[in-house]
Length: 282
Image (cartoon, rainbow, N blue to C red; front, side):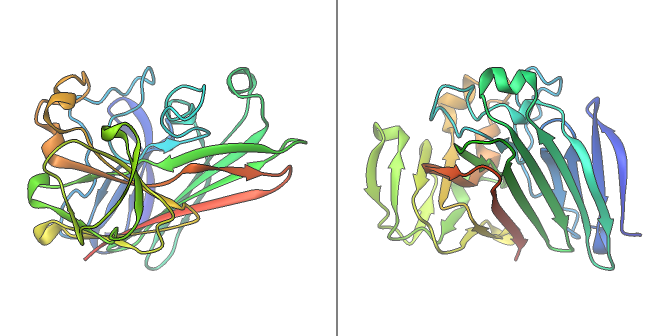
């Protein structure tokens, strides 16, 4: 298949399909600049997208890789995870090479965003697809005349066959904030993180890559610029209360997110900030 980028309709919304080397593919929505699919050359889907996800922009699309900006979770007064994930973005760049396809989407402040958050900004998300990996880079520029601070994340939903059979390596020795246990700060003492109960953790100042071991669907996970790693699975009861998730959806996903959550990023006027997450099929 030729390496190419095409505009498609995906669940009724405009999206771009990147056709990469050896049959790899990825789909990114213009709504929220959200990656909704990543298939490796073996034909396996590597991202979890809920079969009950809503695509009309009224709520965020459940799954894929939502962009959380300028607020992560409820760490402030903005809507949860900020406002760019439910807004239209536009295509800034499309490029194909011998062994990759790349697209950049962009968004900036307008009257509606300034009513929520009174700052001038320009944000880009670049997705690069290679045969066995995707790179996502978030770039935030302060286009105003005064500094601002933000939190954010690439809220990556990884697809697993059974989350109880998966294990996440690379977080040993790091402190994390445990939202399940009243936001207590705990030090990770296990060499592997196994999911056998609800998980909602922000690991701080993580400097090592992670490895999600899930049989023949293992993934290497690396980030730059984002100091924190969020690991989340709602488990049985919370999942049952989500209208945009099937009751067994929790079993087939694990969020391993690149985040700037503990310390807001301070961005002076005219400056840029970059954060990146790389996923590699191993």
